Length: 142
Image (cartoon, rainbow, N blue to C red; front, side, top):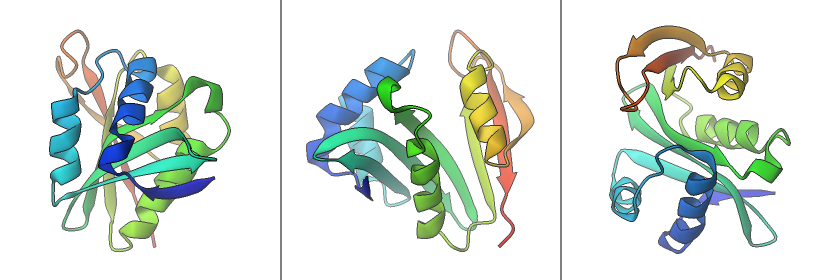
């Protein structure tokens, strides 16, 4: 498995993965805006030319905000998400805090984030429109 920066040519695969994984996937316009952001970094996990998953992060000073992470369902629980997360941390060695939002109903994701050292630190009412978000935070000790 190879981890590399997402390119515009990966947009179709990213949107397909989003559609498989997210209740409200990002539009092509949102993806283009995110890819052009000077604060953002998007990585993909690729194997034999096939995109297995992606992660997006915004960096502000020593804080990171995971904006998206999605893995093709048939490749979950195989270390893809963990590898992507570790690759993001490698790109930002000065990061001290990492934040993300997750649906309360997504128990699998919440358990995964807990295994990475995240803890629940707040709620964002109606963040997803139909559901609140749980804010999770990880304090990095390096």
